[in-house]
Length: 188
Image (cartoon, rainbow, N blue to C red; front, side, top):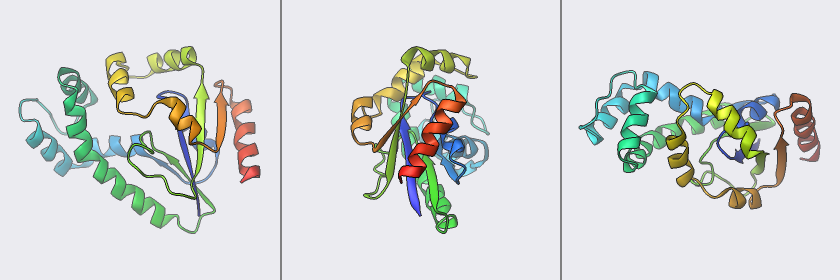
């Protein structure tokens, strides 16, 4: 099994591109969303760590944004609770798909959480900052301050780019990106 990881800026189109590979995809953001909706233990742990904030189950994005906006250190507290759960889900995904030729890893904090292995294929997704901003504003629950906080805990883009084996320039045109995906699969 070859692990292909997509890295890049928030809103650069990593998730869309991951799905174009037509191989099993581990989407960390989707897993986190499921955890907030379904994991009562996670909910209790977050409430316990931050008793001064009102959280309801299932945990709502607005509640988390409010908590993080009030004190950016809360992002680290939440991450320390959620990331080990996501890591377990990743390990189950890898075990389940160990006979597949490729698996695609769509994990925003791939390097930051030291998930990269020596033989991983890393693809940097590059997109125009103005196009990214436009796409982010279209998202439900867009919060510019939260985006800035999240970027602070991520490696600089030039570091991610340097660690990558391939670059996909995402102009948000399906045909162009599909050709890039095909080219990369042909090269591996």
